Every structure is written in C-alpha cells, then in structure tokens.
Image (tube, helix red, strand yellow):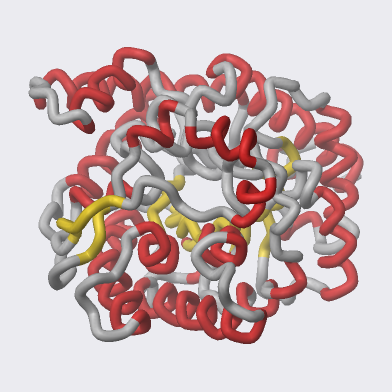
Length: 381
C-alpha cells in the first residue's frame, strides 16, 4: 500500500515552546531589554527543533509551532500600526461567569496573564514586512533540512483580531474588520508565496458567540460573522482556495464550555468562506458528538474537513485505535479523499501556557499519525 493511502494529519498551529524561548519572550513582554540577535537565534533553534519533532511524530502537514509569536492573535500588534490603546485585561466568557473557580484557574495560566491586545486607536497599516517573510524562510529551511515538503502557517483572521483588539478609531465595526483584512492580506500572501498552506484562525465564528457576541440574539450574531467571512474572503482573494484552510474554535481553555454555540447554528455561513479545508473541534467532550449534526446537514462537495480527533487540553494520550475509529466515523460524512485528521486546537496558544506536558503533546501527535495509518488501511482497502 502506498503512503498516499494514509489519511493525512496536521494540527492547528501552536506547539509547546522551549523554556529558554519562553523566558526571552516573557522578558520582551515585560519590557525587559533583550538581545535581539539572541532572541532571533533562539527562535531559529526552536523552529528547527519543533519541525524535527513533528517529522519524527509522522505528521503530514507541519508548521513552525508559532515559535516567533507571543500568541496566535495578539502578535499582530507588532506587525501592524494602529494598536496603541489600552489592553483588555479580562475578556468576558459566558461559561466562566457560571463557574468562578474555573474562571480563576483559566485566568491564572501564565500564558494568558502575559498576553497583550491593545485597542485600535489609529489607521491600520503594515509596518513590519519582514516578520512574516522571515517566518516562512526559517520554516522552509527547517522543513528541507529534515526532509519534509508539506508545510502550513497559521495567521489571525480579520474577525478574531476585531474580537481581541477593541475598536476606538473606525466609525463602524464593518469598516474596522475590512481595514484589518486589507492590512493582513500582506501576511496571507507572503505565506502563500512561500508555497505553504495558509491557515486562517477564526475563533470569532464560534468562541465569539459566548464572548464578544454573547449580548446578541442569534440573528445579529449570524449577521456579524457573515461580515467576518466577507472580510476574510476579501483578504485572501488572490490565493487559490486549495491553498487555504480555516480553523473554527470555541475557545482553547479548560472551562465548562456549556454555552458553546452548536455547530449547526452557523456552519452554513462557514461554508461560504473561500478556504477549501475547514478544521474544527471533534474530540473534546463538548463537541465530539457533532459529527452527527454534520452528517445530517451535509458537507459541500467542494469542501474538505479536518476534524479534531485528539484534543490539546489533557495529558491523556489518545489510543491510535480511538483515532482510527473517529476517522472512520467522519468518513461516513465525507469521502476519505476529503478527510484530514487534526487536533481540536493548539497546544500552546499563548507563550508559557502550562496546560499540557510538552513531551506529551508530541506523543499525542505520534498517536494521531499512527491512527491515520490504521484508518487508511481500513478505509482505502
């Protein structure tokens, strides 16, 4: 059997960062002077290490683990102008309001304490045209060194940036989201130009429902994310659909999640987005059942899906047989040729996240790969 008959695997972006890199990035965040050359050298070493570990785990489509970014969305404050206002310290999450002790535990994670998302107070433009290009150069270099070709890089979507960075400048929310989209277009196109798949991180579409959009009724929420999708499509208009994927997320934190919006309340809007492949949660206790909802509603013929079949919040290592069983279930919904195996969300969405043992994260990725081989033997026999 050829390797092409294995279900391909990937993940959603962030991977645990080495301790030395965490210390340097915490120092930068705290305003402590850091030798820029030393930081850059540590980022390059970390990229090489994380690429090597993904290849060893057998992951099909790999990335740089977001080693250069302090967080999956807030990194844009250093690449775009206009974000000079006061940072939000505590975001509203409807589920955490019901369980104050859970709220304290989530807020106490070092990675979340260190993030900064200043408000937009001026026009948004690209001020750093080197960072995204440098990321791609180092990722491609490391992938080549370890004999790997297929790469992706994640980038914050216009919608999620608008959720975390308050608008204090643009006249309307629509104007704000489209200004972000036009500015982020440079980064998206830089990733594509390097031959990588561009992943748009879109927690706004799902997590937004119980956070920034919790005050809205269902109709207003749907209109809001429609605009987010329109802005996303505007930003990626020059990139082929098959080189794009998008990640849905209900929030990567160990909370109760009992206010999470059902996927069927908004998936029809998601299908309007240009990216060919959609990644979404499918392994955690709150969303593992939603394969049935997608089986009933269907997946458009031109779309590929990458459900999470392992999750990033627990130090349990999923058994490869469980991974295979989950993939076989998803293969009832789309043809196996349109199926990829993924992770519910990132393992370290903020620098210094302490939820999971870093070594366990890579063991989970190895189990993911092994499960893909098992499922491939069955589904393509």
